[in-house]
Length: 76
Image (cartoon, rainbow, N blue to C red; front, side, top):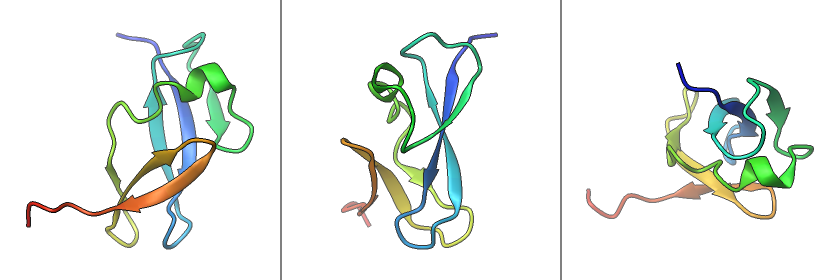
């Protein structure tokens, strides 16, 4: 099993928190919020992005410094 850290990121539309995994930083299975997450952990926060919000269904990712943004899939 691989080690990672989790960053809780608010959906930019509805605010529901989503889990983003990062394999940069110490990877000690810690959980951070987006505002206080160490910079080294944020380097890999979009490794599985975009993420779909469980509440409203939009796709979103993290833009640095520390902001979640909606993304549009142009392949519809």
